[in-house]
Length: 156
Image 1 (cartoon, rainbow, N blue to C red):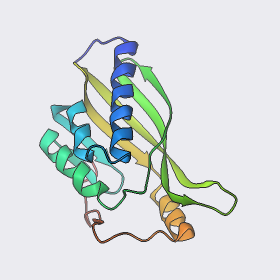
Image 2: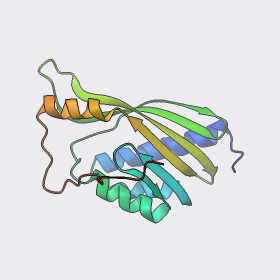
Image 3: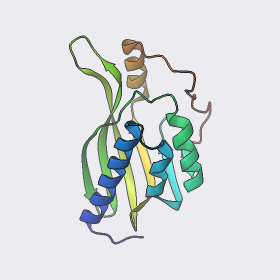
């Protein structure tokens, strides 16, 4: 277990967000985020379930995010307590409403810092019903490269 300072944890997360921004800009693939996890890390996604190990996380990031190239995930805020970081972000679909507001649903990530610029876990939480409602409202249609999550994912 790490005994890192809150500043080190925040700085690592800021690099994570900067990499995610580069992904959203099309500069690197989603698998670039795997560099922020330990070899034995786990990731829990509300739709895809739990994946264990850096190679599985890398594959999950590539597969689960395919077809969402017009979505963004803007960071809103984060807090650090001990070796844990909690981040609040938006799940923002492409396009906007007639009044100019985005189609977006809030999400939370709980990440455990392991030291050396890496996290040992990430647990993402968001209301999938809300996301489904936004998809219907926006008229978003998945492109051909979109992958559906597994029918019965391992939840924990």
